[in-house]
Length: 176
Image 1 (cartoon, rainbow, N blue to C red):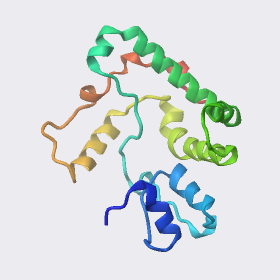
Image 2: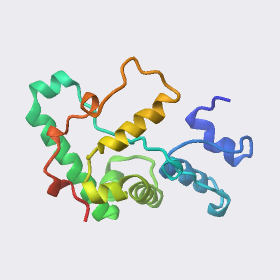
Image 3: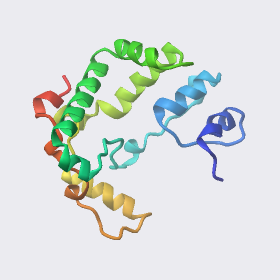
Image 4: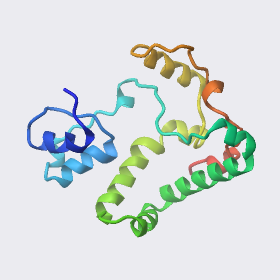
């Protein structure tokens, strides 16, 4: 049954469905906020079951990138710096978010950030290779996994999707 994101947690908390898919930093926290005890929830992370697929990414129009490489580099550099600061001091990062967000609850948003950092950002691979790195072997495995359910017109290579020339030096992307 197709369920919209707006109703998946309410349906699960009401017992209308047995499971939902969603981000660990959203769905599980939304359910706890709806009164579902943490001990009643089991979060199954795709990465714990062999998924090699990468998560969120910065995407830029190739024409814009070619015409404005310094702007793209600056944006990537600022994004990486912001992520590093959020990892270092999540409470401070949430203060900045809350100043721009109406209707959010600070403690819930802080928990979301901490879960996101732990589950999705500060991984063993990021500790080893820094933010923004894409491992060619993992990428190939991810494409193979996606190909199990999706037929590509042309099977992508990392160079078809990623241009790491916009990344800051490794020292600026390391997580300490």
